[in-house]
Image (tube, rainbow, N blue to C red; front, side, top):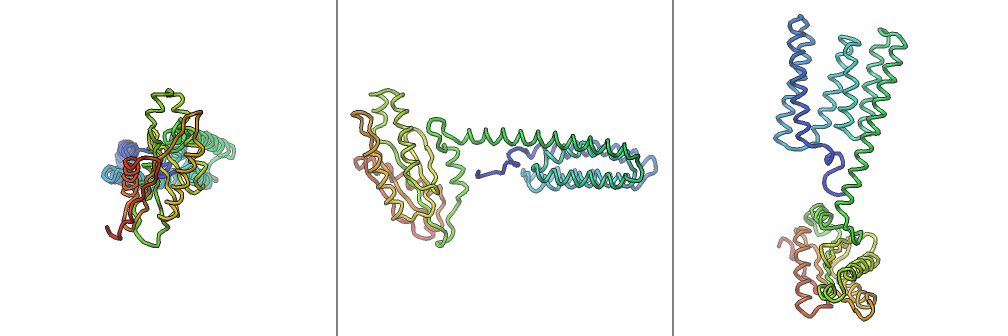
Length: 332
């Protein structure tokens, strides 16, 4: 999966800002209470935590990013929960339970398990000599149960989210990546900055006179043609290549490691295979193809645009043919 990580897709930076502001609101009364009670050390510690949360809220709202703030907030919450146990004892240990939930939201599941496990272990060691054995066992069992349910919930959310993201990036008719998936891949490829970077070519193909197929045989037969073409294209290209349905009857293939000559050969082979294999009764299907190879300093988006222009040139030249873009000069 390209683009944002699964964790960044689950967490909204605005929720982090809200978490910080709520934390400040909850901590400030304790600053006043401990200050009035004469416990200046506790009041100073809580005021320090509140200041960190307030500063984090400002920084996150400006950056509008999740990372690395989620890790920082999880660390602050963990330290801010465990340290008071050392100073004031078991009364502070109850905050370990909401800490478990916070860490499962802020971190990925494995980081949360390690962080929470460490916090629970330190808390138990700090209270080992002050609480009865059964009290410690019950508290440890309760914390383990909360962590287990939190892990199961986080796993379920991540799994469902991954399924939804996959559906959003998959064309339902053909099973190929859709326009959203293609845009994500093109953005991830960025710019070919060095000539020694592996070659990359983009092939854009379009079924010829597809509207006539729909008009004459109906949309059901048109869908059959699209599915058959998608299967043929996917089976023709290498496993390293990526095939997308660009929209309608148009397909895009990103050929990794293919220079212009290789991509042209692949495109010609595809054109011939479509003409030979895609036949429905008396209906003969052909394809027009545009080819371009990323030049040094060129973005994948610009390369895709050049390949698309070559497709239109192939259409204008009579269809059932391949049109190849000239190489881009370095720095052009």
